[in-house]
Image 1: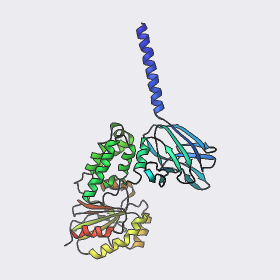
Image 2: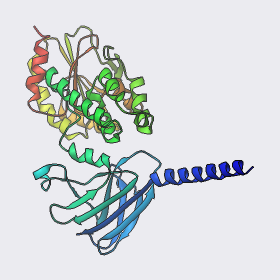
Image 3: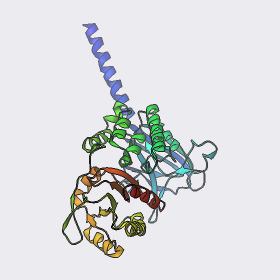
Image 4: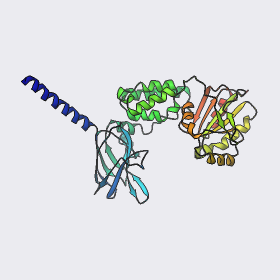
Length: 365
């Protein structure tokens, strides 16, 4: 009887300790002793959702304390205060760059369970020093490594860069920072590349909310060798037109929007391409993801583009972005007349015109 009672007490204590340990592991403490910030309210926010605070506290004589809990994975955050109508973010020196550590800073950090401490002066370089978890070390070490824009690289440089990313994940399979960095630029990678990369993360990351989102995206994304669908999309006169023309030698799909400044900046260069290759077998089509049809129509009228203009209906924008694998614009995709991808070019770059012509000339003879 005494043995059973002892075991029950031991089991109870073990469960209690484990529960306390689990609760403690989700507790976030952010404490600061800083200069250059006035007394008043400061706010903890998700870095990209700064208008909706997660928590707030008071800073007095440079001292502040956040104690909160998190039920989600580590996430990119910021701390800010209001100066009149202006939002002022705390800035953190990049302490990982050796002799250059005092030259570079960022205004975001990863919130992780445990204690984060912040010290220094937010109004003068080298700004604040933040001591936090391992995700932040990766964030700072990779501040100048771009996980996107690999689509414009030649095959050798592309393969080398992707292998560099893979090796970083092999060394840090726990990292939500690396998962998010790849996912934000997922349109730049082939489906097979993304699958290989995703499998390198540990089970905790893959089964997290962010990991499930990544997995669901892979499940609906077309295969690398599957042609794009020949969609019927509305034109400015409300008729429907197909994206592809099987009589064309090569298609140039221009994804853009009226509100996208780099997209508008690229239009004069596209006009040069259209004028040079008109009647040669190049089929150029601009496909807008404008949510407001009126804005798109005004832009089409103003820009006077002498090639087909199509609009993605607002309820189909997400589907189109998944089917054609992009989240950023401007984006140009070259395909053959059956909708098989030949090449793609992301972002605006005036030097891309030469690259476009190199691709086009292989099919126009």
